[in-house]
Length: 361
Image 1 (cartoon, one colour):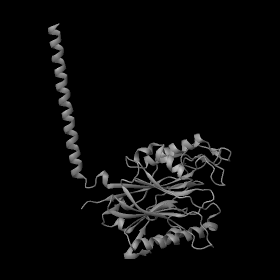
Image 2 (image 1 turned 30 degrees about the vertical axis):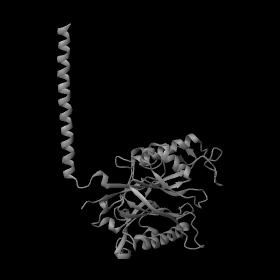
Image 3 (image 1 turned 90 degrees about the vertical axis):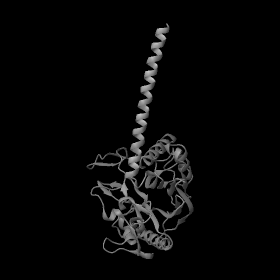
Image 4 (image 1 turned 180 degrees about the horizontal axis):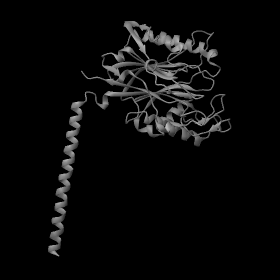
């Protein structure tokens, strides 16, 4: 018994020795690798901040609080709690996957009905662990779909926010307003964010163009005022117009004729200069459109403390957000409803994003 016991002790000691040696070796390898990466990269993950815009398409709760009742159990879409929670999970999954191995630091959204939707999105889904706060007020849209902004308070410190009326006068009435918020990024630089959802083309392109042009004139005036006091401005939204449409060019100018703001600043729209063929954020009758865009002020593309990665906004084209288009070649966004038929998807829009890089001196 004594000999057998000694053998067991010896074998156990050998196993412990080699296990300890292996762990130490691996720890050393990991440690050395992390040092090498740190030497090669000037910008770490903590110095990159992702901002996303996402039209979440008809994101209604299950409580009828306005005259629009299509999204209720008795309504034409037969909107139930099960379908609502499915939408919550889908949208939170989409938002999480918009991040760069992490949930985005800020998410602008449109077509959200209520604070309850935002509360459930932030507290009852995978997003709960990121402690998002949100900005939202009840607006004047007859269907009750509004813009809002989610942000991480440990990254973006809120200074102020307000809603901007996009109607120039009573002759051109626009129900939906823009959201303007100002933040300190990580207790340093001040950034202004404008979230938009401009009038749709539902009644026809020509019949509705005046409203979008009116919205553009208001936003241009707001940009001029903001850029007289600060450097960094981000304009995001579903504009229901393309980058080269009359309305957006009112803000940016054309490729050959840039519009300048105070101190020779200008608004840059990377989708105007670098559109990818057969790509877009929304697909209608077989054609892709860049209705969802993120524009930004020129200091973001100069040698300043904050820059936009590659000076570009980009599409999020995750496979799970798409489905095969049964009528036209290729794919299309996977929607919650196709017509009146429940599809259980995400949205008819794809998200867009930018990465803000804080450079170290």
